Length: 298
Image (cartoon, rainbow, N blue to C red; front, side, top):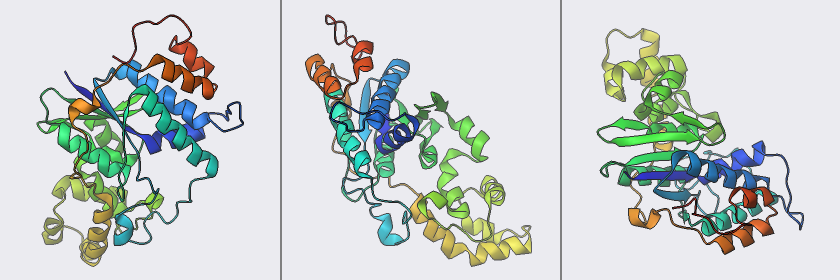
């Protein structure tokens, strides 16, 4: 059965940058994020055994993209990439290439939307299983296990699999309503204000009863007057926030499923790259310094 792994590379790189102790290669360049990312990829390969995979990055310009036009304050708290981190993005892109992982990033698009489009395009394929490697809470809205397809999130740093039941246990709502939930509560990390006066508990209660039907919430006769007033006065804020929290699932993909098939990597190219990064432990792990053996990437 086909199993597609979608790597949220910006998330994996940042987690590795903050989670792996400082490392440098021979020329002094920092490499900890690159090292952690490669190990994350190898862990995914070992545990999930994909038949297909793709590495998705935020747009090359490193900007929030089209959402910034909707709300100029969107992600305004994000600082430009520090030089040593930006350089590691270059290293990771090279690592993907030598490992034979297709890379995808689009102008004016965030990785979340591109990931959502991969999910939307391929999840209905017969027998398809999709794993998204990410710890981003926004990605949870893509989790499913129904007639639309099976989509699971995998946190590579914690080796944790997140299924629909896990989303309900943590968030108190079904995964398909995560964007609505965030439109109510806001998202400080992305500078999304949300709906005034609606907190997490109230948002979950409303969503579990009405789903994403805001008109039904406004029309309900049995809601407290104060809540009805907040819903009515906050509708514009909610709709504005919902534009920011909802993923675009309709980006036209550059690649077909066959293009994403896991391939045998070139041992010499990979060995050369790992040596240049001083990643001797990975060389040993993959037995690249010994006689060729059956590839892990087949």
